[in-house]
Image (tube, rainbow, N blue to C red; front, side, top):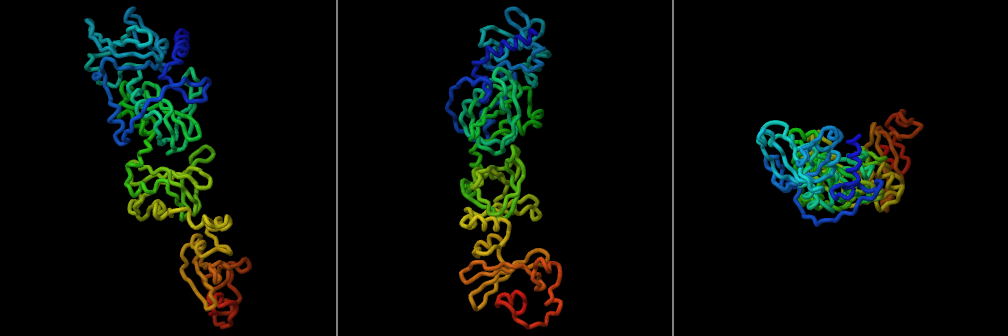
Length: 471
């Protein structure tokens, strides 16, 4: 009960602490925080240049930490009051800032790690649990409950108001202002967001980064930056790297500058799909694979390199619905995963055409037919090519007519007739053995074919006679 009361009292005292930040929409509006100017930083070595790991052996006097106890820390105390030599409950120190003063070896062989509290001016110490300082300081144990504020301050300096891309779908939203309650949320991967607040997360993941999407929705991630006093090392961190590292959660918008200039030229360009393909998109609150029809128009918003591969993730807005889609592609056909057996539509040049395509100048009915690979009356030759591709044969007659032949499945040939102005007048399927294909004789031989192939009777137009083999 005492620990619980101390916990409640400390939450009230910490409400105005600038290191405690919340996503908007919780019970009480978060206090206004000053924005700091940001420095542009290259993402390729961002962590190494700005977030150095400090083992306890490297701690300097004046380094600042915040007490961020977890539930079990309310049962096991961390600090002693230097004046009274008595243990102090972690709950009563929650969100207090401790400033490192160095360490001392006592005559009895025990080691004290000393701090001064910024909030109440008192001195505290942590009793090193075992060994000499030199033995202990190189381990990942550190001082329990303490989140390193140097990472938070540096992140504020560099990241406030920065545009970022989400690199994972899993984030959180605060559910209470005076506590640590949250709920998990799923967002789009590669979504453009802006950093709105940075504060303290947990000891293991001390930097809480709150971002906002273009619709005003806020969510956050607690991430490890330098891992100073976080209790983590690279070997113990790998299983969480996809979520709880900065690189696993976010990527700089400037990541597009890591691609070659000829690839960057596609940014903000409008393209259309030349074939049906699979893409990822968000629907019903989930990101899932969907089939995208041919001649769907997109604007390319981002081109992001995929780690450890020659692929790039395209983040695109569909020109009609403005819905966001993602497609992993290569810009060199030889880089397709799996080589010759790989998916050919992974190649940007094969899958996409520049602009919205000729289909955008057609009627809605014609665009629907093009996307479905059908031919309807009134189509132009260009629209037929969009729907069917190049014919295997073109036939002309003296009257100015033209017929294109397409091979379909099951030995079926589609004949497409054009008038002298280049518009479709008729499209008719027939079997390769010259039988017309319709409901009455589908799967059966025609009476003409049953009678033999020797007939010289000429019926219909010259092009129909060519198509039937009678010309």
